[in-house]
Image (tube, rainbow, N blue to C red; front, side, top):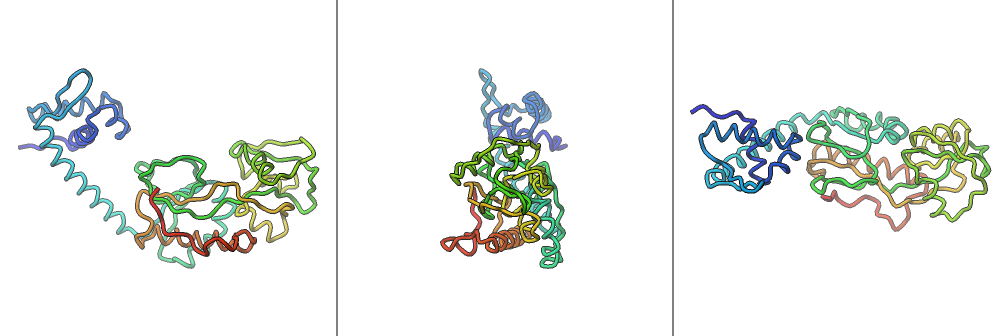
Length: 301
């Protein structure tokens, strides 16, 4: 017997799992009609009804249930085999990282990562927000938790976010406040947390967080910055943080579709970036005595 096209079996498998063509289409990132057509092609190829269609609802027939038991096992085995093959290519790690922390903190420290892990090749992709791991080919994503990610993803907290105003050493409280569209609540959050009044209303607006920090470096005013992202400029004296830094309630996390505690490349990068972040914050005096010296083991979120 000639086997039907693999694509029809995959569409059937997801449709059988959800017993809903609309939800299957969402899972497969196709239209409802595409799922219906592929299932119909499979039924015609086999000469067997796999679904009973009643009042816009679908139900597996006995033949459909029997076939689904087989396709489910086959696709699970195929997925596991592909994961093993990908894990064997263990020297390439593709990381998606938010642009500001990538440019202002991570990239300057990558020579240390390469020295510590010379067998790993890090491919860096600048991006923020939600990510489709299945379609992007990304291994890990470094994100601030300002959005909700899927519960199925594995995550590990890297460190808390500390924010505060920064400017040139000659900057004063009366300088223009620099705002950004990507973190519109940065100044209001800091003002609320610090309880410190600002006596003027002059402001400039920038599209991105890193542009406002760059403007502060150029002497154009005071910007709210992440302590991590201005660590090097504080060391060099290019910037100062006249009021220090406060936790704003957010944190940085590494996200992955696979476990981060398996001893592989993901865990190796996670431990390195955790150590680097905590080292930077400790040197700034921002890791308090009641904080653990090392983060807890990775948890599934």
